[in-house]
Length: 115
Length: 114
Image (cartoon, rainbow over all chains, first blue to last red; front, side, top):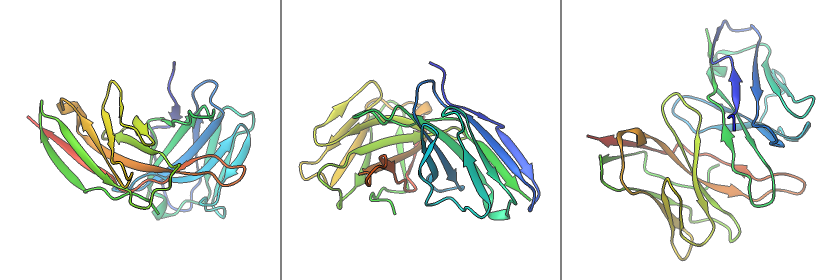
């Protein structure tokens, strides 16, 4: 089966600009996650969707970050306006979310550099 | 905060078994231990998970102590391609109407040497 797809792979912007990332999960996976990974650290969950509903967005900086999953499949994550500290890799993951099988499968990530 | 403690780095000779330790002394009775790895510039990759019993798959073995306060991931015959950061994660039980979440620490950087 095809894996989690993300685009773009790399993005360089200046502070105060806007940026959007796209994720296509594995077909049939109900749950979708966005993580932020700062260099040298483990991934930090930003937001979790179950189908097209938000399950947890407690760590999403809502003053500048937004995410949507309108049809329960693809998702976009937006940052507006970007700050220097947003430089990180943004990872998308998906899982079946069935009882006993919630293994998360990750995409390659988008590396964001804010200048 | 992550519920696990891992050494920041380890070395292993190619062809030997790599044994990666993890402490999770505050784990609850129904919380699983997951292991993922992340090769440079790639997304994390699932390896294995377990609750109480030892587990084995095509990638690795997971040994969990009887008191469940620690575990060891074993890569039986390490190759250069196993060089990566290895994350040991305790899966946090969901709150009502939520899903399970993985709280990630900094992991162990494993370097396989020729």
